Amino acid sequence: MPDLPTTVPLPPVGTDPDQPPLLPFLHLWTDLSGTSRIDLSRMAGFGLKSVGGKASPQWLRPFPGEVAAVQFAVLPVGWVGDWHESPHPQWVVPLRGRWFIETMDGQRVEMGPGDIHFGQDQGTTGARGHRSGQLGEEPCLQLMLQFAASPAAQTRHPFGG
Picture 1 (tube, rainbow, N blue to C red):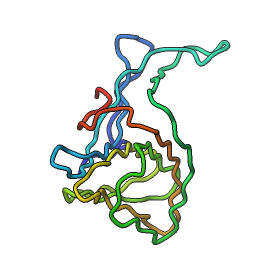
Picture 2: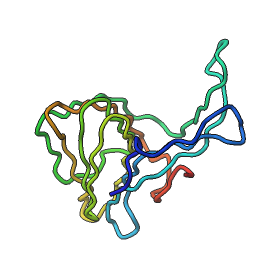
Picture 3: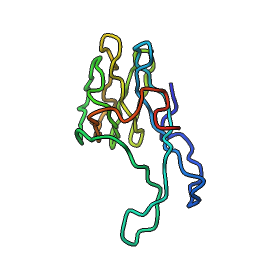
């Protein structure tokens, strides 16, 4: 099982433009054999920039692609999404509660708040994709940001980490 993004130590981040941060995330993707996988990855490409006004520069990472939908999802207690592919390439950010993803290669990852992942398991053998479901005694609240087309190639580390 890969490490969770919330358990990966973050290096000290300052304002030295030669030392940008790397954002840890879980990547759900399809390998060349058509099998879904989930791996810990890191996103590079941050730069120092102000968000406007008199705000000091902060680390920002522009993201390519046309956003198809922004949704909030609530997985009720006991919810299971049997085998399916991600409906679109999408960021899923759990805000509250816990959930899991199980991939075709047999991995199962349990996630909670802050354990973000990028779901990109389209084109799996038989459109099998992954299983997912809610864990524990409270619903899982998620933020989903879906793209019209994938903003990155289906590789283990799609965003330069």
